[in-house]
Amino acid sequence: MERTMKFVRITIRVLENKRNSKNIFWKLLVAFKDFASVILRFSIKGKNIIISRFSLNNKLDKIKEEDNSQSIERWIQLNNIDDPVNNLMYTFQNLRYTLSYQWIKPLLKKSIKILDLGGETAFTKLIRHYNNCEVLVSDPDDLRYKINQPSSYYDLVLCMEVIEHIRDSEETPIDTFTGSGIKNMLSEAFRVLKPGGHLFLTTPNVCGWKNIYNLIDESHPFMYAPHHREFSYSDILKFVENAGFTVKKWSDVSCWNNHGLTENQIKELEKIVKKFGSIKHRRDNLFFLCKK
Image (cartoon, rainbow, N blue to C red):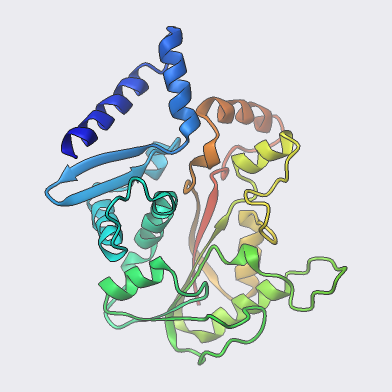
């Protein structure tokens, strides 16, 4: 296993060094690596396996190795994943989970109470198992209406990859989006939080490079077409502030490696976007940490 991982690390390093080579052989290999879209960097430290996703925005998204090793090792142990390399769902989600954990880690004090609006997930299990916290889930509450939770009870509410699935509360067969379901969900999150409590919200970025590429490619512009609606950072900012929250920090974050777009494709998109607006805030996910 150790030899295999060493071979993978060396291969990735060689391909990166050959990226600008004019030799057709190296060009093909580098193109194949980019097409694969997700590259895992392996290293073994004792019994710790650290897995991280290659990021086109490496300098901005770099995770401290000590934090990454802790959270990823916990995921492997908690989910009993014997072969994380070949577990596609684990590989696909691990960077988003790791980044999310780091955002809320300073809030995970002893005996705090947490509500996850997304229902039971592996992330919920992670927090419950490795932190002395009370973690409840809203499932099966319909988040478009009042939820069955006490007021001013929780220290932290999680709303991770949920808001893009919420329909309007007064929806009819033919209707216009009003955001009423989302407004109620955030209002309820505000109600159940203690004064000074926090809301952590994540959602795909509708202004991301993949969405722009989809438009040019004459495809559905959403990052994931089945979503009810996807949002920009200004949309989310408006929703949370109208619900009474103060945004402590927010950021666009690379969680999905731009869904397979190559570095060259993004550079070409940048040329187009620069003619009309800013190339900022184009990474594929949005993270918000808000305070009541």
